[in-house]
Image (cartoon, rainbow, N blue to C red; front, side, top):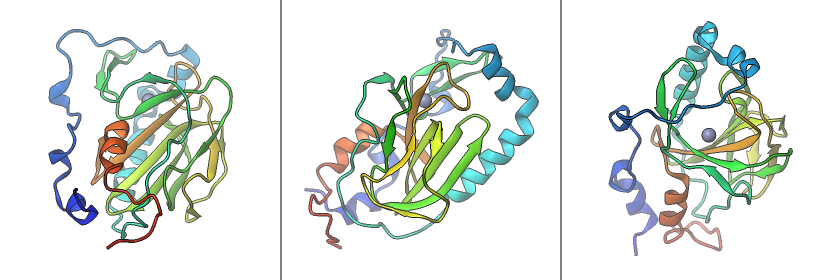
Length: 211
Ligand SMILES: [Zn+2]
């Protein structure tokens, strides 16, 4: 069994296939059906603001804190996956990209919970992610929750696994209401479900520190 110290010693790409621009499909990626009113709020005219927000998040993801504990993670919302990690998409401006998280169905506002104990690094509005929350779990591991209708935590709050942090919604760049859930490790978005699969063999159901 892989100990949790060993797990974090390895480079992130030894466990996970990371999305990269080299993976962009040569064939056309499916086109996102964004309502015109949504595209107006997120298109190129907002590129300076989007760049500032990307830089802010990149800075926050450099946070180096110890792992809160070795607890097992929970899902933020028990719902159907409507779009997988790394699925290709094309925007109305013809730019293609790979999906950096998973989308969970949430047609109406539903409470979502923190997947594990952590500290709220960001809880506010952004252009593309809409109302979104970023949680630091320590050891370079983060979770992110996008397109929320309501934020129920503040920057700096400590949260516990299972604590309600917001309500799903349709803010930011969305075709329809859903939850975009992302797991970032050492600065790279990884597959949330693959992470859960691997972490399940390492985590401690009793939450205790085993370091
Ligand atoms: Zn998404």
